[in-house]
Length: 220
Image 1 (cartoon, rainbow, N blue to C red):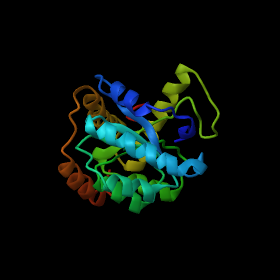
Image 2: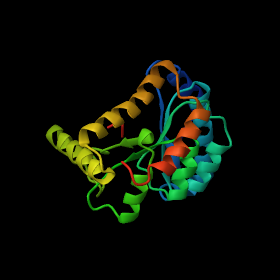
Image 3: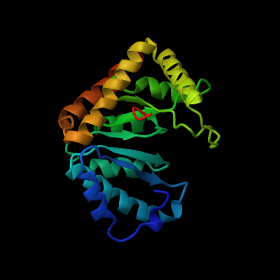
Image 4: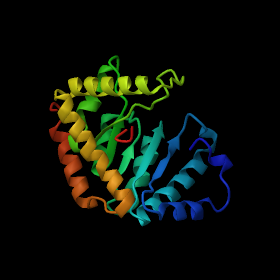
């Protein structure tokens, strides 16, 4: 959404061509009222078309959303997502947003840090375990600065899993298995176009969102 004013005519044709190839997905796409908010109407138009392309080819997509949860949720409610998986990158919405998106079959990706607020911890705890993803956003730090280095990356990765497992009250090894299983859904879908049945996804996502409140980027 940061660059919609620079998009060239025919972009949607090129996107469809790319997405028709094995191994392709769509993203990061989305809506952002803070960064480039002056072009929000254009963002909405482009995002809708991108989602339609992804769904028509049954390809996964990754969503960036900042201060636009109501528009995002309404957009996703208004279309048939065809069972293809989609993830919310760096989820920062409310509990209500979480439940609404879980009902549409969303996966939720988090960058977990030890000093995260209690409110964010509660939301993280409510994510259905079969819809949970983690991300480092490496090499970008929380400050926005870049911190390159392979050793540092693996250090961040270990700390990410350790902290997330502690918050969820589950073993780090089990959490790694969960993230691997969830992330594999996206990898498989980029190759085969086979996603989870959307009706099943909505039922399971909504049920787990309620049931796992106190229990325990796949693309890193």
